[in-house]
Length: 320
Image (cartoon, rainbow, N blue to C red; front, side, top):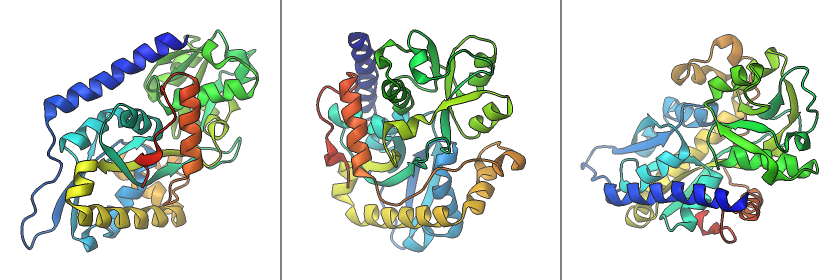
């Protein structure tokens, strides 16, 4: 099982490298004297990025002379080449994608935390579900079965494999299929997959439909898991450290504000997602600490290496 995993993931990494070559590398946008720095950030339209929207709304970036522009992308793996090529000055991506990019020699540098699991088993903002009445009662029962993940070979797949391993099953024996989050619950109810891993708001929908949560996989992967981070290119970090420092300060203030104002998080979600007010009120939110939990990043890297997703020990020089 490990060799196909490596082959598939190497293909993804090759895509990143090829895209970078095609785009060139000029991440430092010229500043106009007397004007704020125009900063483009690649994000994903999910709950996890609520702090940066709040920070823009609260003026944390503008008071640091940054005119922030947020652009949504399909996923973190797509944002990495955008940052290195200069399409974005900063980006949001999951921890595993950044570790893999670093191993492949992609010049990126994390600047601060993105979001973190709640660290509470059974009370996290994402979970592994089977349908009501399923004979599957433990993650180890998924060996030989099929689980839906939003993106293959990312932190969701790694987390589900961690749940299977923790429960005493062989994580390499689980099959994964890629489905968008909105399509997972229908696929589960129709019997096309045996399990799904969903985050909010799809977790709330799964609970409402009677699906059974059998694991908090982010928590099984690592306590206080650093799921994502904001990052920049090494070139920008070297050529314009003042801009990177101002962005990082604004982002940390945004994370602290989000952590202490959960009602504002639920409100701002309505400005960039289609989540209804009724559902937003019931969501389990992630945690938004400003600092990266380095031990959890090490754990992600170690487990990715054990499954062949990394070929060597994780390079923590990625971290600030």
